[in-house]
Image (tube, rainbow, N blue to C red; front, side, top):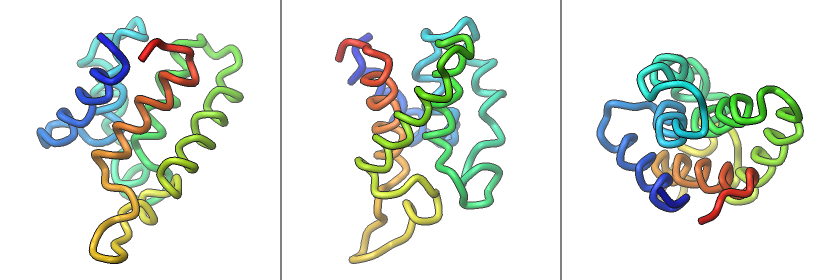
Length: 131
C-alpha cells in the first residue's frame, strides 16, 4: 500500500464514524507495528477531540506519534515525534484540536479529515516511506 493510499484509508476510517482521529491514523498505519488493527483501535480510543475531549493536542498527531514509538521501538522517538509535530504545525496551522476546528471564514482551520491525511503523510515522510 502506498503512503497516499494509507492516508486515504485514514480519511475513510474517520469519515465512517467508526474511528476517532487517533484511531484512524493508527489503524491506517497498523502494518508499521506488531499490533493488530483491533489492538490499535483500542489503544487510541481515548485520544479524540484533543486528547480525551479536552481540545488539546490533535488526536491524529497523537496517533502518528504512537506509531512512531512502536516503529522506532522507543529509540529516537522523541526526536521523530518532534519532527512530525513541527511538520504538522506547518501544514495544518496548529497542533491543538480546538484551534484546528475553529471556524473562520466559514470553514475550520484544518478539518479532521485533512488532519488525519496530513498526519499519515507526515509520518511517512519522516520515517522515509515511499509515497
